[in-house]
Length: 332
Image (spheres, rainbow, N blue to C red):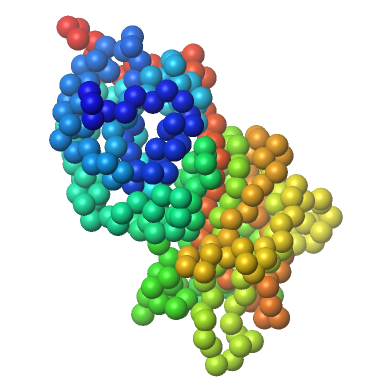
């Protein structure tokens, strides 16, 4: 058991997600027979594969940590959740030793190839779960809670990416090629069309508490015609719980929940990412979010956004009282 970390608080778990590249979480209950049945196999995996600050195995008692269980929508035990760079990447529900073993060993292979964890500095991760800056302390990357079928992005140039591009979990290709993406590849960013404005509508799979956003924008650093260089966002207006995307004229008539001015010094020079801290009290029960990129930081006619990341807490999809156990009780 020495290789397993027993989680006793949300703060402890959030801190671990920020300091260990990969985390495996076993959500269990003392009264759950299948949890007890698979425990030895999980302990063996932890003993064989744990690596300090690289891959960490944890156990989370759902009865003692209901806040964590609610945040990750745990509704049955055992549930094993795999995280990379603080972001949930895979889930195994039920006492299935083979599925758990295959998934964890695949994760361990990835851990060998991944760079050292970036800790508080952020921005160095690659592959699934890339983020451009450190996650806020005590909160998780909940970007994966968006509903892909409901995404809408107004005034995008069709020669570039779609709304879904903004939520791509991979590292922006432009970070390796001076803002120009992969040679011969489709642009993995979005640009505005007729003017510098973009209107993004994001519906969520569950009710969220949104703490902050990260916006990544990587315009090329060199261009012959400076007027053609897209701008980074400057003014951003946020609206919550709208049933549909707002029209640009409609947004002018509705007070924003919060308006943010991104300053030039807010952009991380290494990752092209700006952190937007929200008035948390106003973003407690968010079912949808509209991000209105109003203007850019220059005199150009186009705006560019490469990635959007959302941080906070994911709401539960079912009441904790409806938890169920998965698998057969020993002897049944």
